[in-house]
Amino acid sequence: MHDNDVKPLKLAKGLGLNRRQFMAASTGMAAAAAIAGVSATSASAAPGTGNGALVPPGKRGIILYTVRDAISRDPGTSPYASGFKAVFEELGRIGYKQVEFAGYSQHANAPGGNVNNAAGAQLLRTWLDDNGLEAEGNHGTIPSTISDATLAAFDAACEVANILGMQHVGTGSDPTSSAYKADWDAAAERWNVLGERARVKHGLKLYTHNHDVAYSFLLDSGPLDAQGRPTRSSGVRRLEYFLANTNPDNVYLEMDIYWAHVAQYKHTSYTAADGSAVTSVFNPLGVVQAQPIRFPLFHAKDGASRPDLPNGYDFVPFGTGVIDYRAFLSQTGAKGYHNPMYEQDNAPGGTANPNQSLEYAAISYANLAKLRG
Image (tube, rainbow, N blue to C red; front, side):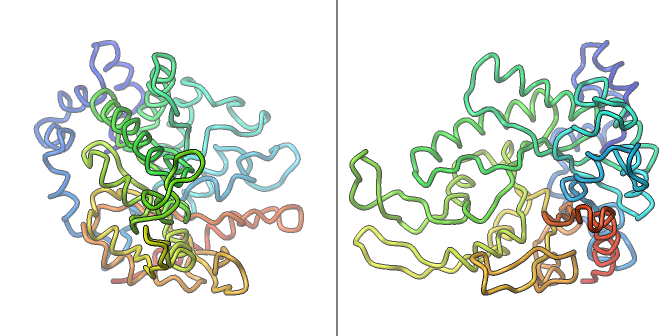
């Protein structure tokens, strides 16, 4: 995708067409079939290219949260890449082909200034194109309620995503932080509405990003507490329940593979309705294998083994930790479909090493490119 630049998007709007309609009209039957979803399974099953690379060159991505320090610093006071334009140039030089945004803010003194608007999105798109980069998604804000005002804000976010050429629009947060079934029911209902709107009106896949708590156990059974809420579990994990209660054509997920492994380490048992403790170890790969098309995006975040820490792991550059990405990515199914985005929460080096996040980005790209499977 990503073949629609800013001028065609303006033309589409002038003709009264949405992004899906315009692409179908301008690129012929193949594009129309892909947009309609006809080719979703067949395209995803096509083998990846890249001379045996497990992650083909065109699928090697990074979420910009990893290099947030570089994007947000003042280019007038730093000799290193600063602001979106310079960071895109550096990421393109390293070899990345995809980026995932974590918002659209940069330092006010960076080229373009405030780009957190539609005009700024057109400028960002120009810089992406200039450096051979494609935007895949964004960790933005998903409405917590459905109203005319929140739907208008959602539509505006989707329009920016279209300008940037994204296929996906999403959030970095779980659908709800609650442990209770009723709250996950409400979240699923809301996401079904928003997911359909994203697909039908804007031609986008709506996705949610997970942390480990989303794979902890749902409170859905047993005695009720003073507020009338269940206190025990049937053994269903929160995000698995969400998957089962949302439309697979409209709602997608971005598995953070690191946090899924943290869940495997931490969330190993639940209290059943009868009060007994039940062991249940989470299998991140199994969740993806069951519905590989529901996971168009991954966070390829690596971890060193740290059993002394509550999470069992600590963030390290991709390819330098203990998570077996070769085994994981080679067994997910739908080869060539998934988009792995390198992320490292602690990549910024502060004043001690102000260019560390971009140095780690180069190391991680090299290790991502080395994967064979």
